[in-house]
Amino acid sequence: MNDRVSELLERIRQAQTELLNEIQNKQQQFFYYIQKKKIRFEPDVKKQHRYLAKSLLHYILGANPLNVLTAPFIWLCLFPALFLDIFVSLYQMVCFPIYGIPKVKRSEYLIIDRQYLAYLNIIEKLNCIFCSYFGGLITYVGEIAARTEQYWCPIKHAHALKTMHDRYQNFLDYGDANAYCNSLEEVRKNFQDLH
Image (cartoon, rainbow, N blue to C red; front, side, top):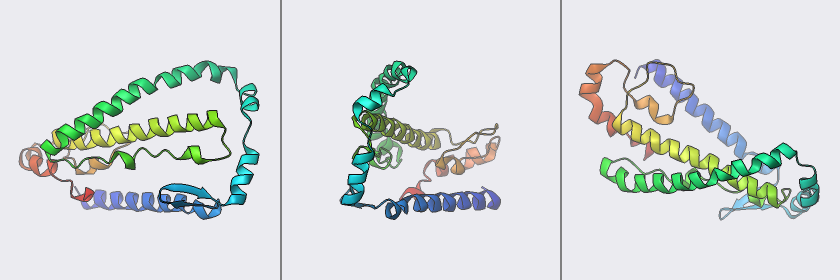
């Protein structure tokens, strides 16, 4: 990889870290803290949140009818998502040790914590749990796929990508046959940044 690409990737990593830190700084602004993985709000803030929560009846009566009609289609996605979660987790549990690929920590991708917000009613909390699970699952599966791709086919695409995963920077350039023949095993084992 050339120096310019490495420099740009490092700047992107720094910006992502800065963004995550800025998001985490909201804890002080909204008066919550995390204690033993539990999110705690100041008592006055929690009381204010409960006051702002929409009642279930008000929420249902105010719902867009099209949203209500399409909700079952969204929730039906849960079944294939559960199967995907089970099979991809099983796949990495069996195959990654054989390939020498570090396992993806599921708990770092599936973060489900919005149900602790007192300003959400039960339907909103269930929807948030679903979205957190589904969104986290997709990123978890994406990381497993990225590590698999690095092992089996670490070649960049000729066409521009809309987005790229974190492992892509380690891939060999498209059309560089010499690098593929001489460096494939090295690239397959290049997971030092994960340790």
